[in-house]
Length: 142
Image 1 (cartoon, rainbow, N blue to C red):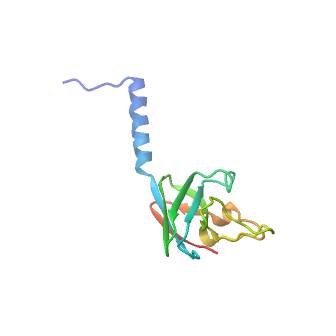
Image 2 (cartoon, rainbow, N blue to C red; image 1 turned 45 degrees about the vertical axis):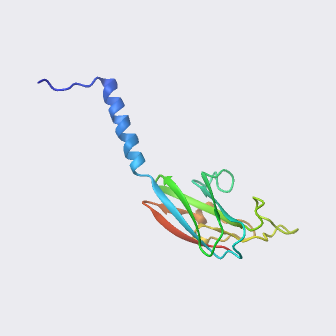
Image 3 (cartoon, rainbow, N blue to C red; image 1 turned 180 degrees about the vertical axis):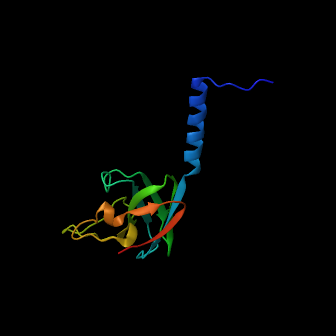
């Protein structure tokens, strides 16, 4: 029986298929436990960002869950890397973070690593978390 020979194109296709299969196997989940909601009304809305350029502009994934004592958001099938989250308790269900006339939020909000900004949102670097394998973090609303 003669050995099987692959053409150059066949080798490229096999290598590409193995690379894609390997990348899919590396997908991880980020579980976010959210504490500190003022009530069980509304939802907790979260946005996941993959880099500083997209921070608070274009989220990679969004997630919304009904509010309870410990709300859990799960971001699935993420590649290992650096991410940051922003979230808020949409208590009245209008889909946005409400604020008063001075621009100060009237609904609770939070960021990964419980990062805080100074008169503004924290930077991506301050909120960044590393994902290497399934990871669980806790964010406290304030």
